[in-house]
Image 1 (cartoon, rainbow, N blue to C red):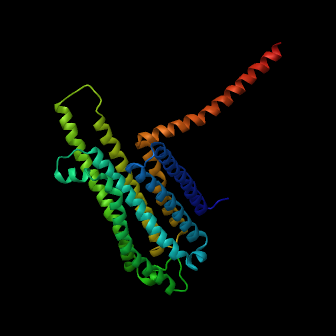
Image 2: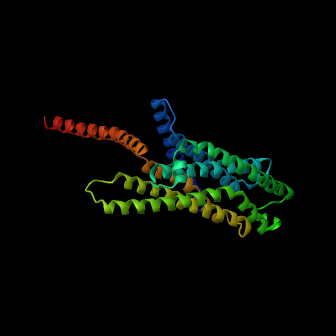
Image 3: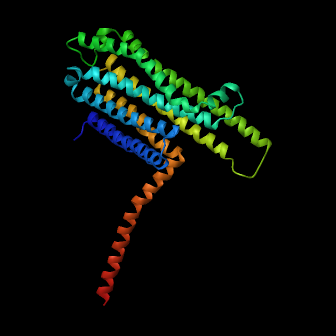
Length: 321
């Protein structure tokens, strides 16, 4: 019988598989669309980059959690800590960066402001990805020295346990965590500002439409609402992600409970896994492709049921004859 820790980790693995399928679907649809059009669009590149980083993030979190829970000796030996730490920072910041780029893209495409700065940015929407790469490079240059410092502290203590931070100092450990996430915090603040500006744009648009009442459906309002749903869901899932990560950190500083750590891990994986399905539902192209896949999967089931019903009818006719 599974223990509570093993049961929670089984949930983490299930979340990881679903997240991989969802993000893989996003990559596949956008790659097929790019091949058909013989070019990559900005939104396509952002979605492909976001989904790819999410898949790597899901499995590096899951692998890191598995080693910490079930094989702490392997985790603390060799270069495992160093390798996971470096890759986690690169993939995690890339994931948040692509998500913020998606928010900026929706904002510049949908919002309606007459300010000259907004119009200047809107005319340079295709430069989002180069700007993202530049920001991530600068963020990595500031982050990597702190990773080297943390890893070197790991190696200084021979008997590191789940409460190793009690030896190095809790305040210093939390300070290192804040420094590691400075770039991510900036991107999340930027997403909050964009969400607020979208709300302002929607309010102004609704006010304008009330002055010019028509009986037709308003596509601009629908686009505002859809973009806001995606942005708000991203912010909520990001908050859950940081709650889960905080629980994991607290397991090192205040408690050595593997059960609490597994619970935090399950919450953490919700962000990269669940957001993929929200993106599918919020994007018309992805929604149409997903509907086609569902219909295609339903057709064989319908054919099988119809064949079985037809077989039963034939069998009854033979009995009657």
